[in-house]
Length: 131
Image (cartoon, rainbow, N blue to C red; front, side, top):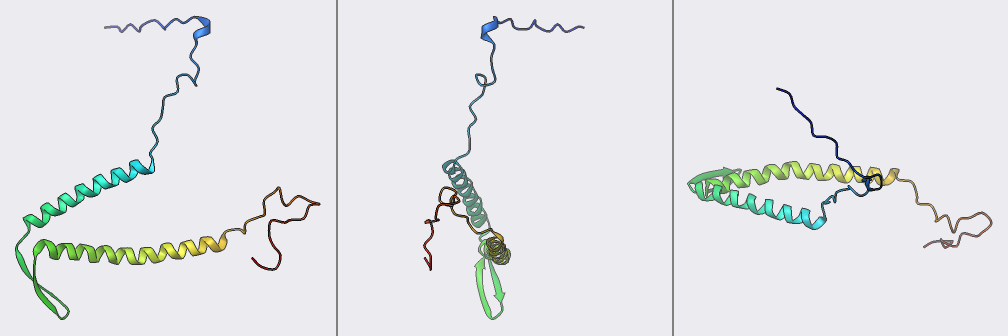
């Protein structure tokens, strides 16, 4: 079996398509669309957590250090998950702060605008003797 390709499209010499006329509109992500997407995903996550809590309502005995009590199983598991997230987030936040301080120290001092710093012209952009 052979395949026959259609003949190339014929155009008159003045109607050739250029790259600019065939450019497609590209939708870019905006802050609003990202916020909307995050809100929808967060709502879905809350629905999943609600289902989890409603399905695990057995009461269990919980002992931590000198605290004793009874909690629903789902609530105890959510507390454990939150504690785990905090154990990760606190050192991570400290490391981010540390890296930002290092980056600020290594950043070059800002230079005066080129218009004001031309040779032969005094630099009036900054006051002498303080702020």
